[in-house]
Amino acid sequence: MAEKSKVLIIGGTGFIGKFIVEASTKAGHSTFALVRESAVSDPVKGKLIESFKSSGGDLYDHESLLKAVKQADVVISAVGSSQSADQVKIIAAIKEAGNIKRFFPSEFGNDVDRVNAVEPAKSAFAIDVHIRRAIEAEGIPYTYVVSHCFASYFLSSLGQPGHSSPPRDKVIIPGNGIPKAIFNEEHDIGTYIIKAMDDPRTLNKIFYIKPPKNVYSLNELVSLWEKKTGKMLERIYVPEEQILKQIQGQL
Image 1 (cartoon, rainbow, N blue to C red):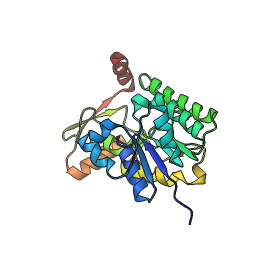
Image 2: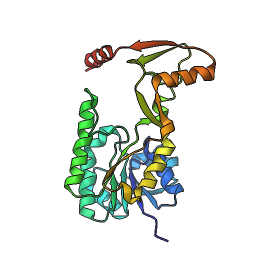
Image 3: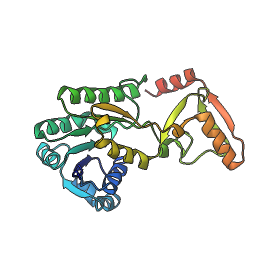
Image 4: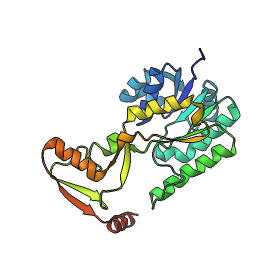
């Protein structure tokens, strides 16, 4: 039986990172995470760190990053959006180490090469595009994960800004509510990523996580919620032009 890949997860105590760590350890992989001293002392993150092998180091310290990379076969980045551009440091360490058979950069949302966005999202996606091209230029084996919408971000509030639970009286629906989106639960995303890690079909490919039964329009989600609660909601449709003006006004 082939030996399981050793996995280094950078950002393993973050939102999506903790689900990837959990999936990796459950699948029996030797799982390491690059952990800063501040994370170890954090009561919440410190408890999570106990579940995997901590590889002391820092994204901004090349030598410690390089040492961590050399322990692994696969590197998965789950850094937050504020650190997306700094993934060039991971690319440099992987290139120098020369032992990594797969790199997963931190995206976990849209396919940034095919998305049509406005500012400020447009600039954020441009950073991810730059990271993709840098990976390819260095000849590093990769898999780009398009996980679409995080269920806990969107389903818990039916996409209502500033809400942590579904609406009870009225719901704001962008546009006409007809376009469909893919909503994936975070444990499932972690599991898919770990399964893709050693799958030759995902090597140097874009990996779309799109279970057919996870595809819904906002109108359909609202109807499901109404059926569950037995109460009809007032639906307030906001035209696309109005949304774009609101976005521009916040820039």
